[in-house]
Amino acid sequence: MTHTVSLLELNRLVRDALELSMPGDYWVEAELADVRESAGHCYMELVQKDEFGSTPVARASAKCWRSTWMLARPHFERVTGERIHAGMKVLLQVHAQFHENYGFSWIVTDIDPTFTLGDMARKRMEIVRTLKEEGVFDLNRELSIPLFAQRIAVISSATAAGYGDFCSQLSNNAYGFDFIVELFQAVMQGEQVEQSVIAALNRINECADLFDCVVIIRGGGATSDLSGFDTLALAENVANFPLPVITGIGHERDESVLDMVANTKVKTPTAAAAFLIENLKRVSDRIMSAGDRITTAVRRRLDYESMRLGRLAAGIPSLSSLVITRRQASLASLYGRLCAAASSGLAVRRSHIESVGASLAPLASRRLLVESHRVQLLAQRVAASDPSLLLRRGYSVTLHNGRAVTDASALAEGDVIETRFAHGSALSVVQAADKLSKDKGVAAGGKHL
Image (cartoon, rainbow, N blue to C red; front, side):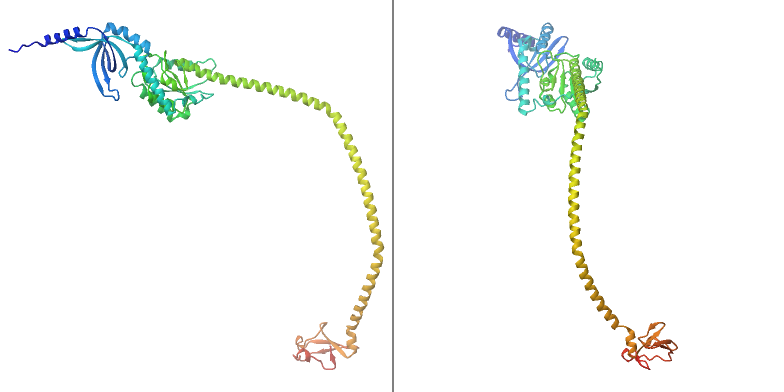
C-alpha cells in the first residue's frame, strides 16, 4: 500500500526544509512590477527582466509587514526623495517563508535606499546623455527671460497650496507690479504627471504669443512623488519649448531632469514668484537708473551749453564790430575798384565812339552818292513809262467807271465809256461789244491804248 501524506503535512515538510536549508537573510536586486499597501502592510511583486530586453526571466511575491514597513518606508522616501512605485529597482533584504495556508513568499526585513538612489541617478544620467546627444539639453536655457515678464502661464494643480501661494505673492508684491497669470491645470503627483504636464505644455504652445514665460510649480504634496519629472519625454518637451520655463517643484535633495533642462530652477512656488518679481524689479531699477543718468546728462549738457552761449554772447559785440569794420573796408575797396573800372570803361567807349564817328561821314557821303545815282536811274525809267508820252504818239485810253478797259468782253451794250486823247477826251455809248481776242482789240478812230 502506497504511503500518503496530507497537504498540510506536505506543506510543513516544505516549510521545515526551507527553514533548515535557507535559515538566513539575503540581499536581492529586483524590479518592482507592482506595489500596494493594505492594512499597513506592503505587498510587492518582484520581477527580473532579460538583460537585453524586457522579457521577465524570474518573478516572485514579497511582503513587508507593518512593523518593518512603517520604519522602512519613511527612511527610503527621505533618502531618495521618491515613493516606492512600480518600475523602480530596489535592493531588498529578504528571507524565505513558506506558510501552510498562504504558500511561499519572500519576507522583506529591510530596504536599501542608496541602491535605488544610485539607480535613479543612473536613469537621470542616461536621460541627460540622450538629451545632449539630441542637442536639446541647453536649448531652453539659451532663451532669455523677457525684461517685462508679466504674462505668466502656470502649470500646476488648481487645488495645490503652492499655486495659491504663488498667485498671492505675485498679487501682493511690495512694488505694485501687475502680473497676468493663467493656469493650465495638470496632475502634479503620481504616474500621470508626465502625460498631464506635456498636455498642458501643448495647450500653452497653441497660444504662446500671449505669454512671456511658463512656470511649472508644485506644492503641498509629498516630496516622494517626483519621479514623473524625471522622464525623457517631458524633458524633451521642456527643452524644445519656445518660451523660457521656470520650475519650482519642491525638490529637497537632487534636482530632477526637468530642473536640469529648464531655463531657471527654483526650489518652491513662492521662490518662483519672488524670482519673477525680482526680475521686474531689476528692470524697473534699470529704467530708473537710466532715467536718472539721462536727467543728469541733460542737466550737465544744459549747463555746459548755457555757459558756452554766455561766452558767445559776451564775444558778440567785439566780433560784430570787427566784422563790420572788415566789411566796411571791403566795401570801400570794392567801391574804389568799381569807380576805376567804370572810368576806364567809359574812356574806352568814348574813344570807340569818336573813332566810329570819324569814319561815319565818308561812308555816309559815299552811300548818298550811290543812292542818288540809283534814284536818277529810276526817275528816268518812270519818265519813260509816262502815259502822256504814249498819248502824244496817237494812242488813246478808254475808261469805264474810271478804270481802263483792256477787254471788250468787260463792256455791255449801253455802257458809257470815256476815251482820252493826248488833247481832250470823248464820251461814247456802246452799241455792240465785239468779243475779239486781245491782239485784235483796236477801236475805230485811232490807236487804242
